[in-house]
Image 1: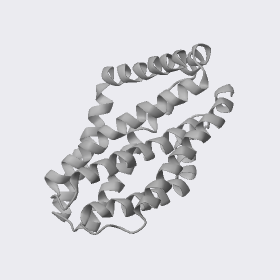
Image 2: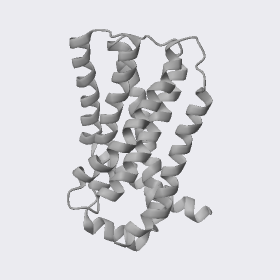
Image 3: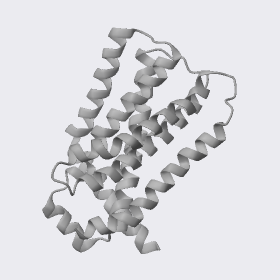
Length: 220
């Protein structure tokens, strides 16, 4: 168990070091967040609560596509062959899931900060919404990490990700927006624990599918 954790930590450290060395990717995503939020501010000013909530999750979705989906697509065949010789598929996929989850938590916080500065702060419970946004960022990162692992083996990975991702992402985004509505009102939403449990169950299912299916992709 200790050796497994050490191997995953080594792979996770590798991804973090590569991110620091390739800072243009990180700052490119930051530029995307800032420019998109500023354009929304110029066109809409400070929108009402429901529009603010919907825009936030849509922006976070596109951030996830740019930040997370490339995690597997940028790995060349030679590098994947090298990882195949030194690491197990479970260690590799779990390190990717953890790294992308951390990255999306950071992006969620930065997006929320820019939204509150430029588009106003309609939140009644800012800390609660921050927690929901981090949970949503983790959920989106898990889905796109799993889809990117599958799409990386295809000849047209972008098209495969769009086809596979659409039926998964749409209900997930709608569920996240419904959960986040509680942060805009003092009224307690009925069935909120069930909705959060459904989202967590969805995340567990994605992790389980990655655990079961990725070793078969690893051998390809």
